[in-house]
Image (cartoon, rainbow, N blue to C red; front, side):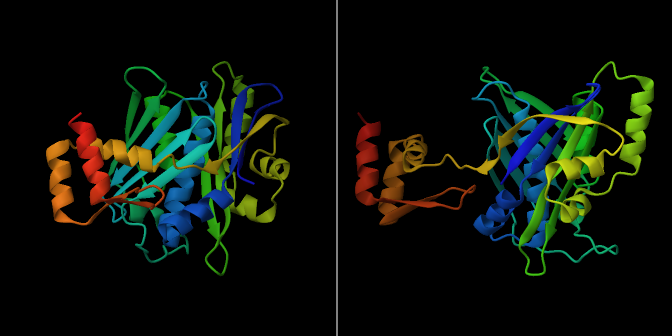
Length: 293
């Protein structure tokens, strides 16, 4: 089951967020018919975005992540809600790249190593909080580590991964975020840094065990960890025919008349869930009448 496990070390010197997003990542792969490299990129981003959304306080809060690199992926967009809902899209999900020399998927080559990451936090205010950060590798984990350090002045460890089985299905996906408290003692910080320096990849740990407690023990072996709570993570697209009608109404009567004259059916497409909504000439006429009052 997709979830985020939240907790702290026994001394409350750092907090951790452990995400399991395997089923979510496989669902995204199916929806967008993604290559393995594209799935790894979107899957890594989904895990850390879900973690960041879980930190938000209001049930209506949302976070939007936009990544635009100079690689063939184009633009990647992911929206995560504080209740665990996730929706995502990428411009070119079909593109596959050769493996790197170490046998790993070339996510950095797919995203691009030059570009920008934009984080929008919608907290129900007039304007969302906007954070910007340059890409440092395009591998996602390193880019978010840099974002936390520079845009939020929060020292963080980000370890993300997506692993496939021999049939190309997502075998495991998720990650861990570790963030220190402001008054962490020097000796605790030093030990944490040792654990981080020798930390295995998330996929190595996840491949060996599905148990969250065992995964935490493998990632942070020097500490007693207390799990505080668990929240679900799930695919959720909020598109609907009503929302598409509102988008058409926003075009105005003249543009709707042009659409009606051009084709018997107008198609509206949701880029997040790949659902198509069809509007007949009669539908458009009704909308034109609504625009004109």
